[in-house]
Image: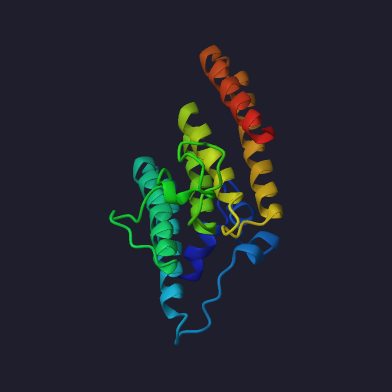
Length: 216
């Protein structure tokens, strides 16, 4: 990735990716950064895996910026599947599915007596790239006003962040949630100012669901 491309990705005009995704310096960047300095030795496979996740993530953002929204959604989901597969492999788990299992796999929830359909149970085998990809999915769903998809993936954000091995700091989570709430607030304000009663009602339902999930 060239310097110019990195600048374009990290300083996204529409959703302030420089801070929101940990780019351009600051606390988020420090918390979510990866070390690529060791090009040899036993850490190489992990570094290669993280480089693949990073490339897929920024490819998805490029698709989003080109208004290829369906493709971007699938690529962001592929980041999640890829990280799950990598983490399960690192844990010595032999998966039978091509993507290494999904969010509803019973192995992917913390605790032995929980149901995989529980939308509040912490998710295992996800990490920071999964979290950031899911956060981007919520933003895409907000564009299309898909309330069902919004609350599903917003819940998934919390499930990943609350997992003990996800590596998401409380500070990073708080910033992400606050920016998401600002985004929802702007959505409601825009719908109200546009005189679209149906759109205004839909945005209020979305806001209620998101705020409700945030404080639950």
